[in-house]
Length: 247
Length: 323
Image (cartoon, rainbow over all chains, first blue to last red; front, side):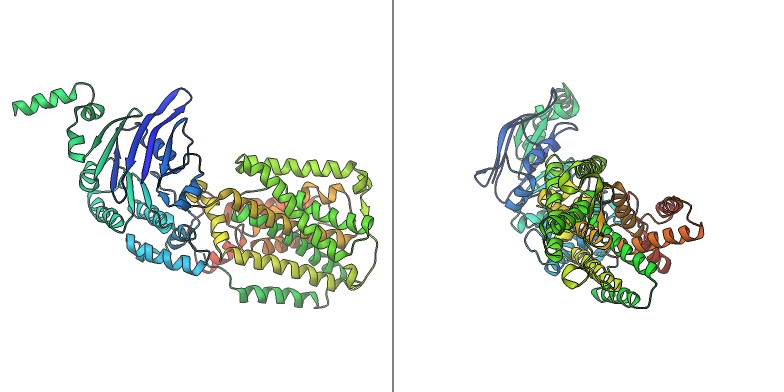
């Protein structure tokens, strides 16, 4: 469904993303992990159209979308959430979500009705008239997801929706992500929380210093020595193996 | 965020119309006409600066476009006043689209956008001041011809009614904004442009529409100004005074609200006139009062008088963190 081919992005000399490729199968939950500063969010921004790549291509449903503006991609069915939540402060929860719903209906009352439905679906049903700044961190993350869902996406890009949540909140959100996929939305998610990645993802890609260093099922990827070294430093994989042998 | 109902707006407009016929003195009628013209200009500013968050320092460009269209079309081409009014409003939208195209293309926002609008208005002022076609520095004097077809009335109350009618249109436009997709998109891009784009909002197109509507409303105010005073020159039509009054009235009244610009214009001009009277006409006294009001309103009611009135009744949640 989504095909990313050797995307490259340079920020004046620094290569943030270096020929990264990945593909997301329709109906899957695909994870993108990697240490801090690996370039995950930059890669996401290029997929969603917020940054223009210096090389490579993005194609979606067989169509090259590399040059399309973000709002055109949204209309084609790609929705994203932001790592740092970006609610519309002057609007309440329902109105926030309605901005997304307006993508498919010009009618205000219809958009507000859809917004209420989606709010209920993500667990914000009781907060419709709250200001977005009155929500808890978890609430705002839900709002991000709700707004993106309101655009009726086919592909949902989730950028660390679980970051900043406590364990019980994470347990609440996991079924929501799975539920979204079960409704037919393909998901590509950046995530740091391994519990979530192991739980949710069918395939995982690992980005380190801008390069894609591993891919595969979550379990195999976690045992990949290259991945372990990317996270824990040079030689870590060997040390771990030695320790396991001793134990 | 309680939004005024259409019925409330109708009552306010009706009240204004009643006051117009309540036997006001000539001076008060003139003041009210001026209030309505400024309110209309401020309503235009409010669409762009209030709802879309694109503060302009150069709404004089639109005001002047309307005023000059009105004056030039009638004096040079003998065009009927009503037709000139329509053309003037259209010209305001066109000037808006022109300025918008150039600045939004390059993604100008915030103070950069404010400065560029100021620059456009200044260029327009200098051009109008030196071009013979627009009467140069001498300005343009409109012929006095009373009667409905000429949009001039021996009885000033009728002209006041027309300005109230235009303000009513401005109120309805703002009301519609608060109940439509377009309005929601404006607020969305004001609050967070990136997030709006991610939700499929074509921010360039939305901004272009906003500045065109904004320009049209403020140009209408310019048209009425020319038709009321029957004289304009570059400093009146394109002078920074009108840019300031427009944004001042909207901000003091409550930017991004339906009633803010109207309330702001009435309060500001009312107080200005009052101090002129009390101070015995010391020049600049009303400006001093304007300044004090601005400081007070920013300090105590950053969301404008509209919000202040509401919070006096019911303490609204403090949501003005970044305003």
